[in-house]
Amino acid sequence: MQKKVIRFHRSDSNEQQNASRSSRRVVRHNFHQSRSTQQGSHEDYQKNDSYQNPLFAQNRPKAIQSPEQQEQALRDSQKKGKEFFAQRYEQLGGDCVPVRLREAIRINPYLINEQVMVARLKALGVEVEKIPFAQHGYWVRARFSLGAIQEHFLGLYYVQEAAAQLPVSVLAPSSTDTVLDACASPGGKTSQLSEVMSGKGLIVSLERKEHRMPALLHNLERMRVPNVVVYEYDAGEAGRLGMEFDKILLDAPCSGNYASDAEWFDKRDFAGVMTSVSIQRRLLGETVKLLKPGGVLVYSTCSLEPEENELNVQWILERGGVVLEDTGLQAGIPGLTAVFGRTLHSSISLCRRFWPSQTGTQGFFVAKLRKV
Image 1 (cartoon, helix red, strand yellow):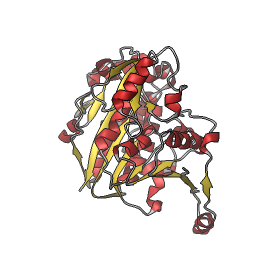
Image 2: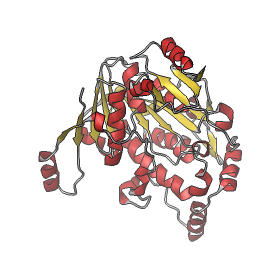
Image 3: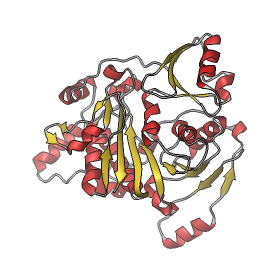
Image 4: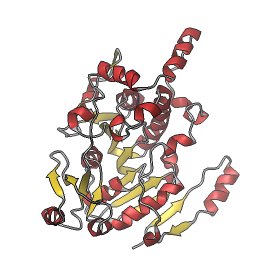
C-alpha cells in the first residue's frame, strides 16, 4: 500500500506561484526504508518563525501604548523558571507538583480485538491497566521497549500518552466525513482518526516539516491507514488546498509542559509562550475558515499556559462564526473563565484542562468548536 505525498512550496509572486504549481511532485515513499519513527517536536514550528514576523502581525495582542507598559512587557517576556510559572499556576488554581508519567498505548481495534491484544501483552509479561477515560487506551509497564517488539511493528497498538488520545474521541469523525489533520506528524492522531472512521471517508494529513515526514509516513503504513492523503504543507496556508472539511483536528504546536519534559522550566520563558500563541492563532484562524457549515474543529495543546488555551479560544470566539460545545470528557476540569483578572466567555467552561498532578497525565487542553 502506498500513500501519495504532495509537496507544496510557498512563493512571493504570482509568477513564482505559477511556476511552483507546474512543478509539484508526487513522491511515492518506500515505508520499509523509513529511517526513523522519532516523534519530533512542536518546537520545529518555532525554530524559523519569530513572534516579530509580519506574517503573525494580525494575531499579536493589542499594541501597548505607554513606554512604561512596553518596559513592563519586556520584563515579563524574559521571565522564566519554576518559581515564575508556579506563581502563575497557583493564580489559576493549579500547581507544578512533579508527576511521573506512566507509559500508555492505544490498541488498534481496526487490526485486532482489544481483549486479545491485552492477553497477548500480558503473556509477554507486560503489566496492563485500562485508562478509564480513553476508549482503547491502556497504561502499560514492561521490562523492555514496547516500541521494539513485533506487535508494535505490526501496527496492533500505538505508543501514545494518555491525554493525547482524547482529541480524536472528541472530534468523533464518521465513516463518511472529510477530515483535516492540520499538524499531523508523527501520525498518532491521524491513525486514530482512521480507526474511528473504520478506514473509510477521507483524511487529509498536513505536515510542514520535511524532516518529520518519514516518521509520519512510516507510522501510517505501520498502522495500515488506508484512507489518507499526506501533504507536506503548512496548515497556515491550507486555504490554498481549495477544500472544505466536515471535521478538523488542530493539535497545535505549543510550548509543552513540565510533566513531559524534565528541563521544561529551564528552557521556557514567557516570550516563548507568546511565540507559540502567534503560531496557534495563525493556524486556528485559517483552519476555521475551512469548515463546512455545521462542521466541527477540535483545538488541543499540551500546554498549561492560558495564553495558548483559553485566551486563544476567547480570541476565536470574538472573531465570530463559531461556538463552543461540550467535549463530553469527564477527565480534567472545566476551562478557565477567569484568567489573571480577565473574565472570559462563560462557554469556555465547556473546554477541558488537564493539570498533571490531578489527572496523572501530561498537561493538556481540549476545545470543541462548531461553525455556525
